[in-house]
Image (cartoon, rainbow, N blue to C red; front, top):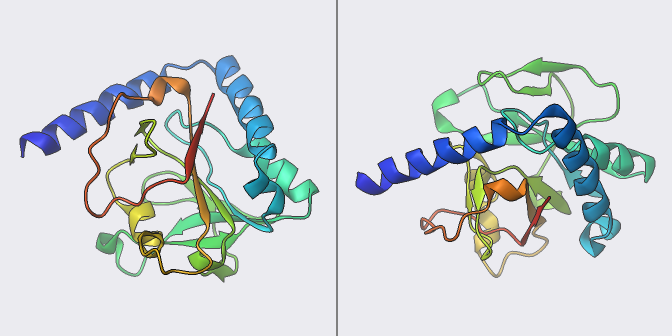
Length: 192
């Protein structure tokens, strides 16, 4: 119980730091993020890229999404499953430019329609996070959506696993995170 309280407190401290980043700094960070992601061989080779629409001070993926579209890559966004909200499951849906968006139950924008893709078929996924450490551990928002969607990557025998790249602002880095057994590790973290 004490560990859960400590994790919740840490999550709130980092979210507050993230929300305090001004609009100009957010814009510059999103641009720098796109530059760094474009340089990754995993991005250059990817045909199907999972991204997200930023909320609550998260670093924005809009510039990398625009670059992906220009490069002929297919972009996919997370969509919460609505048939059983307590299951904390999400799918990834194809998101071409101009597709309609709506708010989910957390007031986060997501596609209102689109073709789902098996998460195993994604080549690269940019993963939002609240906090991260240099070992590739992350603290998410606490719902476990990404851990459930990509739990298959924890099996070393799984073929065709997407590369999971955490993306964040520098202020979200912490010294160390003690991962839970169900936490899905990131391949790397790009922070600006």
